[in-house]
Amino acid sequence: VIPLVRRLRPDVVAMDVRMPLLDGIEATRAVLRTVADPPKILVVTTFEDDEYVYEALRAGADGFLLKRARPAEIVHAVRLVAAGESLLFPASVRRLAERYGDGGGRPARSVLERARLTEREAEVLRLMARGLSNAEIAAGLVVGAETVKSHVSAVLAKLGARDRTQAVIAAYESGFVEPR
Image 1 (cartoon, rainbow, N blue to C red):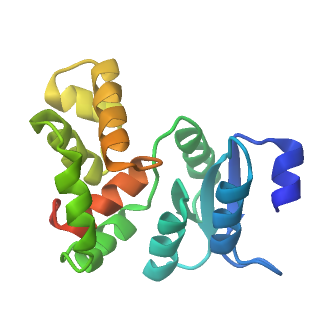
Image 2 (image 1 turned 60 degrees about the horizontal axis):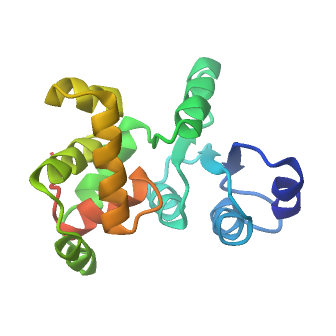
Image 3 (image 1 turned 90 degrees about the vertical axis):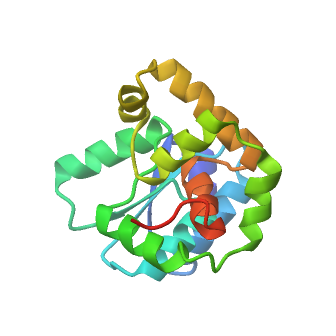
């Protein structure tokens, strides 16, 4: 996978969880660790297993999609991930929030406490955790999309998160965001 990514330089890699030689989660880690300016990674699988979803996101994947998705959904997913958005199917978000949002990952709380998010940044993080896009957040807060992008960038920088997905995981693990 890594030599292919280095040679082709794709914007997005669709990574299967189960591959010969190296599973998709380890391959995701390897690509992100060893490829300069790595691509966005969309994990695609037939397995609706929460552990796969969680591990893929912890490895740095930008999204997770089931292979049973319709072709138009797959195209939409690739475009979203390429644009810097995170993607999970709704049932996974709900189950991950229920499973990991119990505060079992308390060490992340210190990350959020040290981040010292402004009130607006905290609000944006909560909305990100609900799965809202920048446009939806902008509409809800009655601000421009560029303003939301600035807040998202500040949240990511303060949390040391590579992307929205990692920021949301930290929010749930720390108990900052509670499952609905």
